[in-house]
Amino acid sequence: MKIYSVLLLLIISLFNGQTIINSPGFAVKPSPYHVVNFEPSSYNIYYQLQFSNNPNHPENKREALCVLQFGKGFSKFTDVNQLKKDSLTEKFSHQNMVNAKEAGEMLNIHINYPTITVKKLADKELIVQDRLRDVYQYEEKQPVFNWKLEKGERKILGYTCAKAVANYRGRTYTAWFTKEIAINSGPYIFEGLPGLILEIEDAKNDFHFVAVGIDRKPLPIYIRDEDNIFKVSREKFRQVQKAYHDNPGFFHGKAYNEDGSVIITKSKPLPFNPIELE
Amino acid sequence: MKKLLFIAALGVAGLVSAKNAEEIKTEKAKEKAPVEKTISVEKKATAKKPYNWVTIVSPCGAVFYLDMNDYATSDAFWADAHHFSDVKCN
Image 1: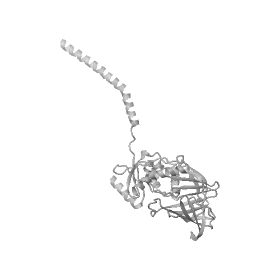
Image 2: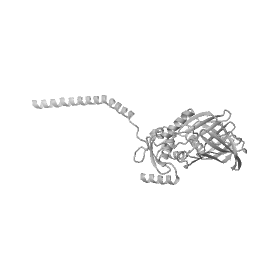
Image 3: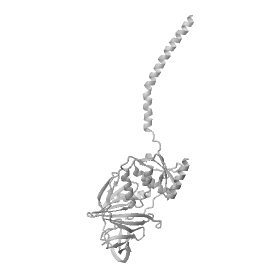
Image 4: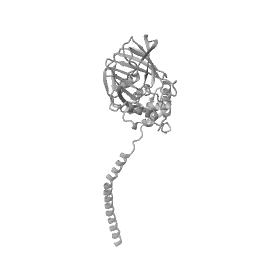
């Protein structure tokens, strides 16, 4: 009977492409949820991101829908699914336990682009959070981009865009910005042009952001601030990030196959192609 | 007659001695009992928790198991479930 139920769940999982927890009585204690709220956004610009996380197979693209929440003093760039996950985490944090159905909801939110950047506009400072197995945070000054304007014109979302090129930490980027929206910002941490960046891609086409929608619904600009976030320097984070991709098995716990064998002890390296090469 | 009295006396002596022996045994057992309890409690304290397996069916249909004793809260569980799902499916 147990075999049939596993088979049934396997079929459901295959057809729906969903993660399912098949353990009656499953319960896990919810993690704490704490945020620092900055302000509501005045613009939300949605970007479709296509990126390659494997330098050996740049043709294999991953996708994420991201949002730039732009306010008067702060802006934030994140995967939209991260906001959904935060919302569920907040809901679960008020409960004693999370059950199998609720855990399934959480596990079916896939964050393909885990980097969160918050800009303190007045101070010209950045807060970056990234998840390896745990969440790491570092702060740095907002970089200055040496944009060179080039000839070219493109329509994106009905806005006329001009072309600019800049080098940044190991990659050459081509940006398309519109003067019709007077916002000095763009996806990720890009800025420094006389208008909103609606499209940007690097020369290798490893990272390609294109605006797909804009609205002005006020959304809270916040950052997670739990005690278990590792606050480190950028240099330290990059060391840990490299170590994580070289040997993820060291960071993650153990999991077991159906025959009882351990899935990995020292797992194969994960593909590693960060947006910032330097 | 003498023989009978001797046998009866032996019987009485035997009974009395047996009662005493039982009392001694019980007292000894009573004395030992707490020691045995302590040992069993100590054993429990050092014993490994029994596995608390959770079956996870990943999006590609691959099945794997995590031990919930490894997870105090949900965040690490989500991270490992996603990671091993990726490992099994990619």
